[in-house]
Length: 261
Ligand code: PGA
View 1 (cartoon, rainbow, N blue to C red):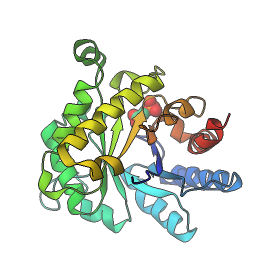
View 2: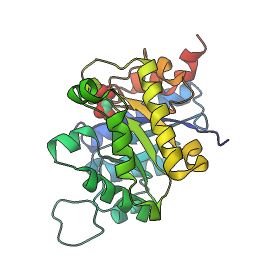
View 3: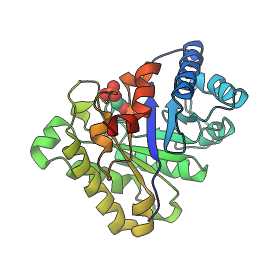
């Protein structure tokens, strides 16, 4: 079976200008270096805003950092009359490796439907960018359908174009746990991750199911990360608020240290 490298993703959302972003990545890199972080055991990726990507890519390049770069969104289109959009072509030129797609804030505030998410996932595959597909249920959906139904449905809808499947990551983020301090239990996260993986296995077979990383997100902190990553079904975390603090985020990246306790 393929070994899945843990994935520690920091989603900065609408925070930090490019100078603050550079300072944060520098501090993060030093902190992880001092702690002897093993990047082969836990990949660390930051998702800055678009205006910071170029500066942070330059820093990563110049200082030969092992931190990888992601974008918070990607256009479904490659070029043309789409004012305000950022294409996968342009992102690829900046060595962007991952793109968040279908974050609940985009689904909620920008009317991103499953069809839009699917088109963006296809654009990602077209440009060799790995989509980090965000799925999760609202509190109302949790009460009506239980935890797994919506995330499983959203996962399969995002991957509906089977013809051009590349590597992808799924981030399970219960909407009621994002930025609220209300965390899912490790058992809830593991149970939903298992159901998502089963659905991927049924749709795409063992190889895809075994290599796909499934993350948990929603109020993750250094103090609670180990609980989630103890389950073999949860392969990493998508972190919002706590990724803006270098010490805290590096504490999350070094979750293996907490596991030993
Ligand atoms: P949070 O955000 O860690 O601040 O809850 C997670 C996310 O939205 O990706």
